[in-house]
Image (cartoon, rainbow, N blue to C red; front, side, top):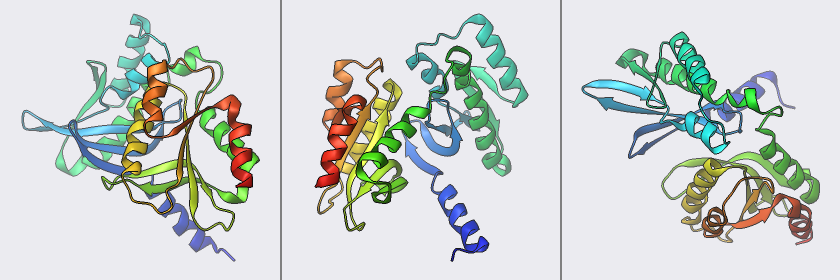
Length: 253
């Protein structure tokens, strides 16, 4: 029987897996368990500029608005600037920015992440339905057609770079031992970029047997044909409307 203590330890471990730090051309990219309305986890960048430690959101929140077709109007910009001031940040060059001291860096990282989320939250002013539900719809379909006991949600998988990715749905074999498929959802251009990077990194690992990598995309998404071709280089690309055909076949394999 799971005790309250063991449950707390498992929950803490699961939450820690949502935090990831990776060095990139931008600086140190820190992924945090703060979520944009489209379901993506917020990532902020820690870098040095003119001898000071700067934390910013890389313009990711503004890009989330752009990929959803939402323009930052003067009225919206004024609202974002007011929100940034509330968090002790600046909204400059489409980025949420704050300077950090060495001893308060972790707190500033968390503050900038939450401030960045308020930018993307402007999506909720223009979209009646929450945008983050598509990923959950995909996971629910996988469970429905393959069987819930064979599906692990947000399972951590490590790529060749050493980066850990939380896969939306990992499908296990019928013996519930080994993964046979990694399934992710894509709703917009930002999702295309992230999933390509994720699946490319994972594809460089030598798994035996190699799990199938599947991208499920929204039929109504404003994706270009070129975006789908790029994803096909690292995955099997499936329309959401074809989910039943694809996964019922997997259930019988």
